[in-house]
Image (cartoon, rainbow, N blue to C red; front, top):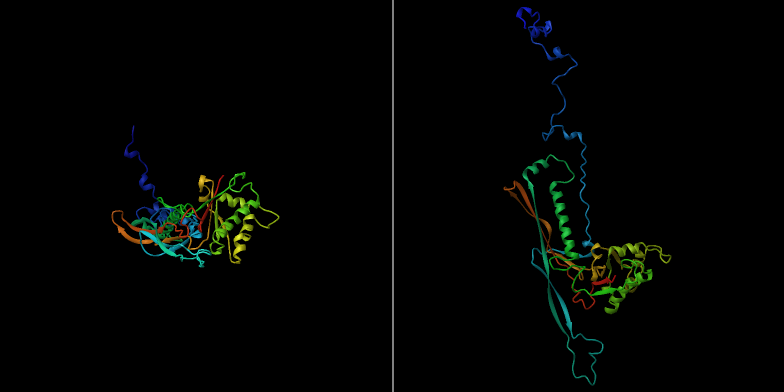
Length: 365
């Protein structure tokens, strides 16, 4: 079946157009009406980065949430910067031989010789460690950064990360040493004294009386005074302890003192009493690296006087930007950062058989 042309009574192509619009041009408004706005818009199709669905719909906080890092080596050790790139740090110590005393130099009728005093210089070298790091910033990323409005530049963000890595490195060198070297917490020339805490019920002084705790701190000062002929210029003003010792000290209260035991010891100790100086300030702080230090790994207390003459680190070339060059192979700018730091120097600790300015006190339990 089918149909013939004579049976078609309506032309669908012509009759679909209203009679008034036949044979002439007509507008979109006439075709669809005034309420319809086909193909007409007033919003952006893309943003400045040519990305569809513009990101301007999101609220941008310009504050950057960077990692929170903290380092303690600057508080514990004096830093001596400058000097440029070196292989070693050298210093000299003076030795006295045949020093006079109250009896040897008495000259009387029976004396037939006069003692001689000799002096010598000993040269000492400590290792210097070089820290190097480089980062690549691609050309295209640099162009993208021009469109980002943040609190800090990308270069500054990278620089902060690099400097944080440098501080972690220096703290490792300062406290424990590197590549066979030693640090403030494990120097081979520091005398070790044993703390008998076998009666303790836990770590450190836990379970021991307040008297035992205070007596130990005053015992450190007593040892220094006895072995230095009461030389108050050598008295420790900084005592670093394991974290469990600090936790125990700040948990103790008594009617004899109005604050924690730790604060009481800072204000009332033999060092302050003997020095007679109002400005003598004892600092007692915890360091996690001391928790397992010492003979047997039961914890170590480090006492010393914080002064550049006694404990020092050199930074011949402090960490800084060294050079930036284009790298065509990686289509980037490569920036090099370089720094040098020395091993910890303890000029007044010459042997672990005699007391020096720095001393170690190790728990037996």
